[in-house]
Length: 284
Image 1 (spheres, one colour):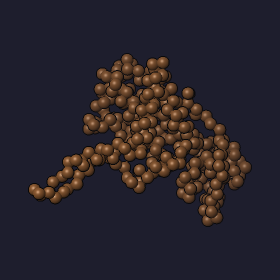
Image 2 (image 1 turned 120 degrees about the vertical axis):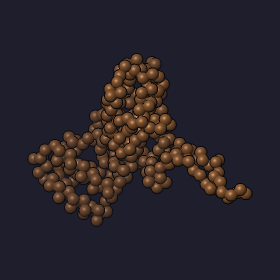
Image 3 (image 1 turned 90 degrees about the horizontal axis):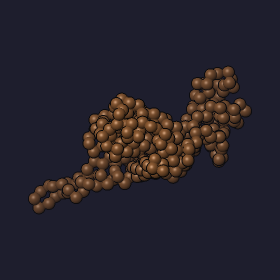
Image 4 (image 1 turned 90 degrees about the vertical axis):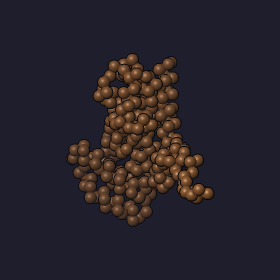
């Protein structure tokens, strides 16, 4: 299944704000100066869409942007043209997970540089460049902003991590990927895994483009209510016949809390499915 990046703008549901919320939105829209919008440059038009999106989402963060942007047409008939011409993919609902998985795998098949015989000849700088190009395409498929890929010497237990606008790959594994095709697969899977975390964060904190509201709510609870479990050991001090001691049986609980939390299960399954599809396509 080839990726689908060009989509039509179709509103799938209707929504209403209460009177006070709608008044605040109306006042905000009037302040944007939209009457002469088509006399302005493209950057201003994109800013209008972004600003309106943020105003509505402060009241209804659960709404997909493609739904509430239809409301813009009530302010000016020209909004219809504006939406169709300037609405970028991050505003639209993303493809289903299965479609994303197949689209990413299809793109990876076409990247000659990540085939092991070619990869092992690359410099570290070129490896990072190839990974950044892959991340740029994955971000487009997932309808989210792309991150910057960099390297860092990390603990040998860590393949990499994602933080805000960065994905960091452990330099140790990137170096080793030139010697072992299995490690190359680990590097690629880590990139996809961490990119999925950025997708989760984007849906929770910035704009919901994921197909399932309930999944996004689960991610939100994991990130903000229950809190992210980073795998740190859990220790409880107990009083025994010889005084205070640490119950060693509980020290592994931190690892299990990390491994089985919703956002890690989702990212692990998503990345694993992409790599499985990629291998099947390469073998077929």
